Image 1 (cartoon, rainbow, N blue to C red):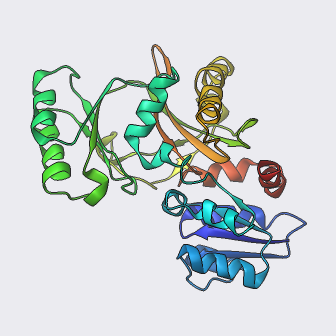
Image 2 (image 1 turned 180 degrees about the horizontal axis):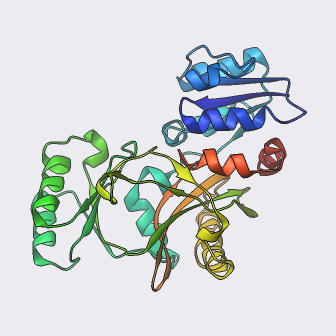
Length: 315
């Protein structure tokens, strides 16, 4: 069986490493790949990243299955394009990937389906945003998020009014995040322990993975701006059996059922960024794929053949 892994991060290296363990594998490709994937025996890469070129590559090489790692090709519709060509691919289509592609869509979706999350305000106006942080209705610290994709850099935890105004100025006026920051979401800060929770789903059934936790803040002592990809670990004690049940019953199943009920069934891997608050687990964000770096420790602990799971998602 031939498999293509799309992406160039540590997550993709972990996927390649795990897929290579399957006895049914004859060839694994990774596009555009990276230095890590290049060190795996017999994993060629040609630096292909455009969706149309990837589809051409799959047809030319007669690849049996494509697995998408990063969010950008998902939100751009790589799954839709491959499915139109009759090519097997694991991941949500563009409509379902909006759970990650738009913070506002995700918030409104959770509100519609009673999924616990923090109170929020959406705005495109710097004046309205400044008035909101000035009137103190969210308190401090508060969270300011760019609506669109920003490679893990679109979330600011403002400890005071000065930091909040700076974030508003940079996103809405200086446009440092480009189109991703044309609209922002201001949220009440949730206090508690943060946990990453990933599931496999075929749009109806759900298989949860083990919990993990990544290191968010750039400086020691949990200080400084949020950043992605600084490392992660996985341990069963991150979620007690009772909290695990609450996550599945109140968050995971309502999300999958809600997407199906709205005509956009979610098929693939779904990441739930959770905060374990005193009131119970709440959703910080969705990711429409495996996390990077959470994929590394999670797949390291996985004993099953990953190809079996991917085929279950498709079939």
